[in-house]
Image 1 (tube, helix red, strand yellow):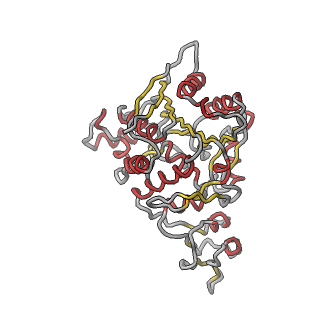
Image 2: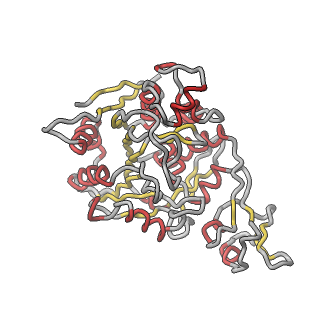
Image 3: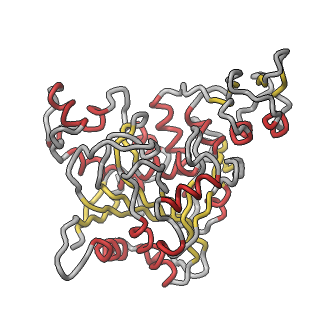
Length: 376
């Protein structure tokens, strides 16, 4: 099995350096400059932060990568796609407001933010995958228009996938609203009739004539006509269109791997993960729990699978912080610390994070076997 290199730096500093300088040294030694940025549109995929959640990456880190790309003649932009759930990032206008509120603006980062799947989450590119679960991935158009992909990921726990790392950031994060629906459910959207305002927006946007009014004047979706594109999700302003979040977690993990391959296949890509403020749940929540372990450091690699594996190993080698959710669970579960620990399974026993990495390796996305190279 091919061994990939994963580069790592800890978070110790002295008077001669700071974390931003260490990040720059890390990615340069890991080879980011070999991507050939000159005149290339470079999408930096980053979670812009759900307001109220303070675990997202500081914009200062993004500026380091933006400045490096621009110094090489590249055209960098920060990007994310709209969310499937109702919140502050469900459409591009609110999403940009949230990004600016969290400090992601051209003055702080040196580049613009582009919401990849457009105003209502429907601006997408269909990318052939021909995978075990996905035939065509629905990826935000701006992501697919880019020449180079760089991901910056806050590594943390996740209630559906065990952990959220580079694959989750790229696969789920780059999916349009229709793509996110495809990953999260095995069915099609439905209407919450109590929330329907009979505005007709979903009917107008449906390309399959699958939506009509019932005798009470409420929208209903004909499941035999619906193709599950998700456009009605973006069209509804009142949260009346919902998704049956019914996909098995193992299949969800496999779909994320196949979506990630759709994002990175056939073009240069590079990945950075920050194992700090490791919260037990997704950054999409409007709040965050205290970290489950002490901060570890920053990791970088051309291989997103090896990167996620290295980050999992690093987290599992740390003791749980007393008083954290993991610490509380450790008191009631027999599993020990160290190499045998599986913190993410302990946090979310109904998940199996290994499935995503195993499937990603199977489809040629990368290797779980890695060499860790420390950068000082």
